[in-house]
Image (cartoon, rainbow, N blue to C red; front, side):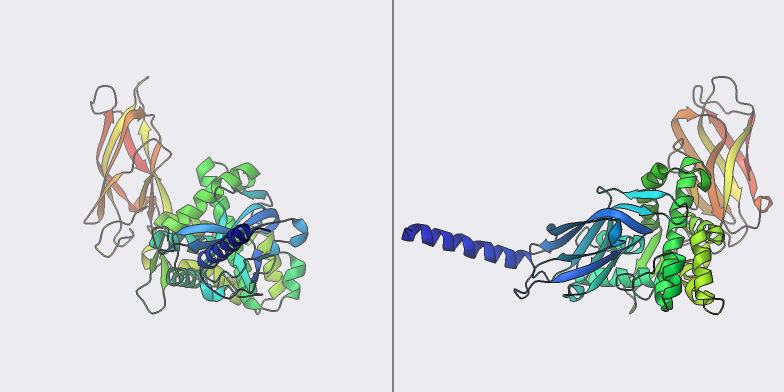
Length: 423
């Protein structure tokens, strides 16, 4: 072999080694194998992509390894990530059995379920969890860092979401499979608490899909559940606020609509077969312990959104043939303390939301014991439900409606044959 060729080969080899060392975020040359448990329900098959970060700002994730798994793995598998020691992001797609509906739900590769852990957790033989809760934490961390994940952000948001859902650690506590046989064998309440939280999430997604499709949960198809999954998780991410300035980061639910859907899910879980298995397996003396994971989520959401109920605003009366509504204005009188507000006293996002895609985001102004509301639609809509109001009022009779103005799309004139009711 010519000396010049040998030199070239050595140069290429050294360059490759340097690139691998820099890309991997440092560490020794020894290989690191991490174990993963992924559970929303039990996964029957899927793919996991392991990503690390390179670059001075740790803002360029790259693939460390990709593995596939089948039903025989029960959502458990391992992967070699080389000598990588930075923030690790695991993205899982595939199919799992949803406990709330007993449907097979698909997690798309375009919207994978994620888990992010700090560099200190990337140890040989470590077990990491991927679940809807870790997905929420990873999305919140990325949101806080403008899509850049750092050790600090990952630790803070994993801790905050763990506390919110009453879990010891969402990335390392391994949930028990929600089947009677596994639940009866396990003796660790913290694992069962995680199982309870995942049951709550399954029911939450089902309730979200029900609201989005207008169908009862029992009538939802697997495709409808799968399509609703990313939106449900995203709604939960948007409805949670994380305070990282405290010594122990905490998360609170700040969206009334999110709190309401979680409360719906909590109520519906009593009829959930998997929850019945869980309760039977832990026995009456430990039921309160595992139910902490369910109730903590609601109690941590703050008094402003406790016991929130959903009310519907709609137009009623006779609308002339061919006429359309382009605008609605009204003053909604509300009971004292029934509307969730921020620290400045303004209504929280989600207190009033338009129904369907007819109206744009409403104008909401809080006055003394009243909300001044305005809804617009350039193309015009039919008469019927047009907004949802989330409040802690006991019933619809607790509200008053005054100052109603409904505008015709074609003429711009007021429509006097319609009025607004709340129910």
